[in-house]
Image 1 (cartoon, rainbow, N blue to C red):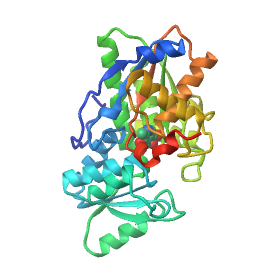
Image 2: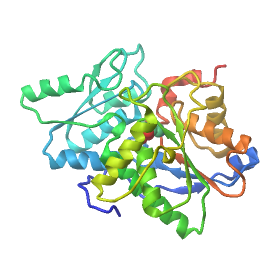
Image 3: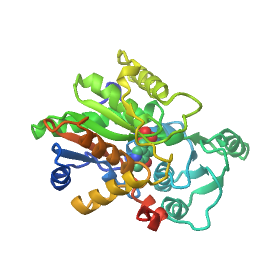
Length: 330
Ligand SMILES: *Cc1c(COP(=O)(O)O)cnc(C)c1O
């Protein structure tokens, strides 16, 4: 499906289901709401990183790596899925996690340990600053480490989301459905960059609405600019001639609340509503916030009722167990 073939390691189950959320739609008095179930990609309870890892680890295997290193937060879904893929492929997995070891091992962290990942706590170095040093240490003892980028967001990870949008378009065409908007959580940018590129390739007038999750800028760079550059370099990797400008990077920063991973009233409402109206679990960090964005934009009329809106469920529910009662406290 991609313009150029890339090395790939099968890890998940595709296409993921495309479903309707009629009760949520009715409760909101809004448009028809569709959901792309990337929480059901498989690979250790699913999520959007399965798609990215198929290409990233395909490349790692091509290069003959025998161990993989990545970084994230203690409750990183990306780290949990990378740890599972490492176990499946027999690649020793090292995770560089921001902060200190918590008193209780729960949620994604519990699963990281279960998959046998080696965990390195990195304090204030929250975005993989310590990876080069760890990589050098592993090389010194004769290993062949491969660095999986933060959030799986390099050109290979974004390419996975080029394919993902093509997968969705095919499903919509088969069902004769049209779409006005696609709402999704955007944090390390690979998902958004891939969707942006695919939208151009498909010449599709759907509006992509990223909900910004993290206040902090990635690698000290303006996040919109990072997404733009990743879309451009992914186009280059795929050998397609596509022009992008900052206007193509639609990001709503209105739902950042108290910052990354802090559950506020709007996330609580979104998680509860989706659970109680549709029996579907969102997560406290990404999809809860992104759904709060969708709900907010429907209420404000930013998303109209005339065309269906699609929510891209990117996974993350294991973190619910680490947050526990906090999800419901006021
Ligand atoms: C990583 C992640 C995202 C964000 O995807 P990016 O490509 O990093 O922007 C969204 N939702 C969940 C559950 C994630 O784990």
